[in-house]
Amino acid sequence: MTAVVETALRCAERGWYVFPCRVGSKQPATARGLLDATRDPRQIERWWTGTPGTNLAVRTGEPSSLVVLDVDGEEGADSLHELEQKHGRLPMTASVVTPRGGQHFYFQHPGVEVRNTAGTVGDGLDVRGDGGYVLVPPSIVNGRCYEVDEQSALAPMPVWLTPDSTSSEHAQPSDVWTSMVRDGAGEGSRNVSMARLVGHLLRRYVDVDLVAEVAHLVNGQRWRPPLEPAEVDRIIDSLARVELRRRQSR
Image (tube, rainbow, N blue to C red; front, side, top):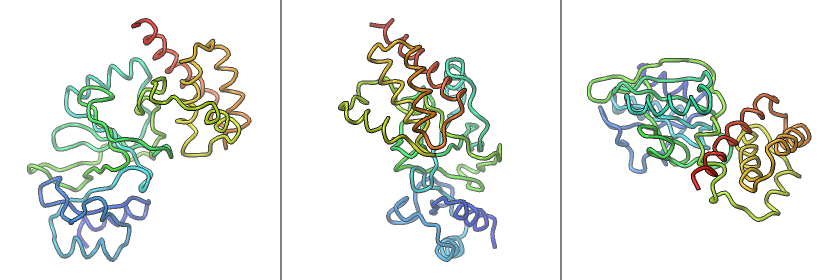
């Protein structure tokens, strides 16, 4: 069994959907690309036994419960550094070094839609979520390999990788917010749901101390299981800074 087949089978065992890309390329080798992605061991063996040398791609998004932050070269590294100064360092998580010297950071999918973005979060930073895919080791592009950098368990996706939670595009009727507070949130959606709720309140000029009281109360009574209090505080602090910058720029 080849290394790529072994890796593809391990990816499938952890719940990731995989498919082949052309030799030395990011282009899908199947007719429907990521829509052909599978966890079926027999199909995986047929693909890479029948066409050895093809690259290995993992479908991101909800199907694989995976989101990947692609940090492209020095530009992406500089943008990531600036964001970490504002929001704190990225949590320890699995990562891969790309052939161009960039890095892929792997995170748990939050359970709500995560759109693919290119440069939206920051210059040289792309997010691969629902409807996206990434190549993984031992894939090769331009004669260079994708290489494992860190093998930690996947961390929850940082809130700031989603579109600005205080943005007007998140405006919802009041019954949506009432339902969120009443029904709560479970694992996989707690962070993003908390960020949406906090952002909604801050955007409407609710005092940040009151926002904190509400957030911790809802977290303790409605989130299943509750987030760590320090994580709730981190979300509030992060979004409060975003909201302050928005108000100052008006």
